Amino acid sequence: MIEIRNLTKKYGQFTALDDISFDVKKGEIMGFLGPNGAGKSTTMNILTGYIPCTSGTVKVGGFEIMESPREVKKQIGYLPEIPPLYLDMTVHEYLKFIFELKAVPLGQRKSQMDDILYLVKIGDMKNRLIKNLSKGYRQRVGFAQALVGNPPVLVLDEPTVGLDPGQIVEIRKLVSSLRHDHTIILSTHILSEVNAVCSSVVMINRGRIAASGSVSDFTASEGSVNKFVISVVGNKNTAQNVISEVNGVRNVSFLRIDKDAALFSVESTKNVDVRRPLFNELSRASLPIIELRPVGRSLEEIFIDIVNKDSVSHTESVNNDSSKEAR
Image 1 (cartoon, rainbow, N blue to C red):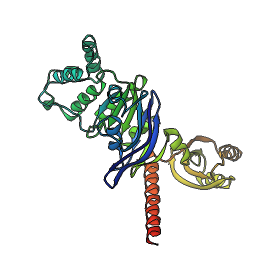
Image 2 (cartoon, rainbow, N blue to C red):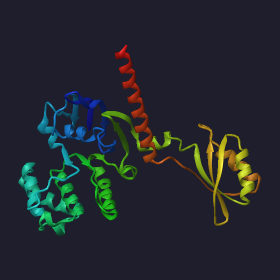
Image 3 (cartoon, one colour):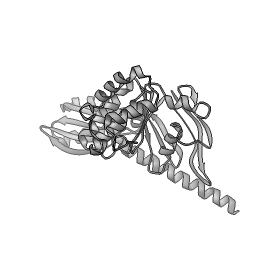
Image 4 (tube, rainbow, N blue to C red):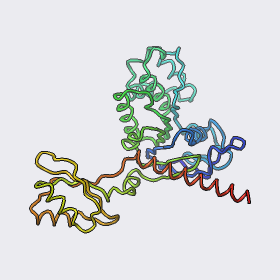
């Protein structure tokens, strides 16, 4: 649905985006991650036709942004970090204005308006001035304008920023419910949000793609099979000794007693599955296993590692280039 190829954006000598490429498939919710200044907003501004790129191509629904900008814009509903609201309008007046801007056929406007107000749960606020709404409701109004015209693609920039926990949960549910009818790019700093609603991730740093893939690929590739928690009924010292003697176990740490079971954190050698031998040895020692579950690193930890490694690699590359020039 979205194809970005070799996208570059320069401001004079500064390169905001450096030859990035990625795809977003139809019906996918892609988490677009990166630290401040990484190039996320620049990418979204180019994708939505707000600014031009220096080089590269952007296609949405088969239309190229430079060749067919109007067609691309028809495909996209955009919610910026600060929703583009007119505070002296009522919610209903504002959405009517957006319907006119997007040239939605007159015969479709009332039914679409009713559907959108119901979907984002602002029907009871439609006659109130936007300036009198809370931040959470203003965010919902911004979401509503992105849905006008039923665009197949939604670009959401920090849709839950500044909201309270209850409002965040509601917005997440809304985003998840839209996956059946829309392809979504979700830019956020709240990485638990990515775990909750996204199927894939693109991480950007210093204007370059640092990593990309499915959410499950990220957690699986970062050692989730190598570390797990095991709960055993019986003497904790005996259980710890048995676990530590199993071939492939690198480290075992006692965590706590949970009711009548001892809870341990176990690390195994990479690519060695120790679960079956653990079961066999603990069974022989009459130490029943109550629970055994893999423990992966959080997406936050993975993200920080990837960004740090990419930054170190970039610094080394710059230093090497400077050394060559000095010679």
